[in-house]
Length: 314
Image (cartoon, rainbow, N blue to C red):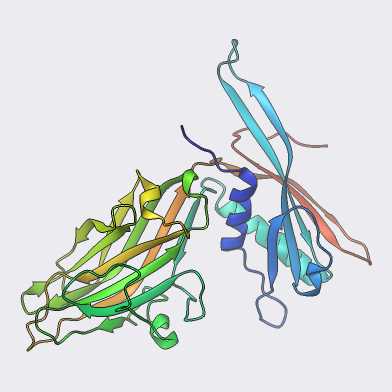
């Protein structure tokens, strides 16, 4: 049986992932996004707070016998802050995110942009080995902050791992944090951009870790001598690829090993992962209003997913 994600959770994650408020001094505002209600003490540490809750649900009968129905969920999104300028920017950002992702609010893309050693979610490692190591093997070495920056974007700045030991491959390991309940996952797409070469030939092989079978699976290989995009798409048995801590792992290695005389490098330009969940598939702005006073400015916005027709509220 398909399990649908709570629409409040879907909208909270969407705003957390894509909302970006820039203050007047150019710094990013520290905005907390969560469920209702307002926490005034929290605003002592944050520049603003966004709360999401269910306003109401309308169940509409579409067929005479009632077997075909449509459920319209009306969400309430409130933005709270003491700063008038940030308040308007928060409202603008909520508009931008919801309008931009209105047809697929259940799909989220992740990349290593901005990730560093201090990250507690995504991680990247490298090693040289004759065998494929497990994700928890002590043979992995994490990238430095400077090395992480080389895989932030899809550009000409690449991270390179070279091997000059006979019979050993150049390996990369990428860890992604899945911020959704495992039982609502619908699809995961893992992408690797880069290339590798060795004395015996060119190419990179990518695999995903199955923690249930304790094995690297779903291999996809390339043979290019320049950047190529390798993609693994998972649409079934997804809980097997996300461990109890919510992590998924992608392995990349050169197709052929070094011969001990010529280096065998793997060069990484960029990698990303996207995932979608079983959730409401449409999310649109219905109406919004601004409420401001000297003591505490805020605004309320109403939006709802999963409806093709919009009802105007008074």
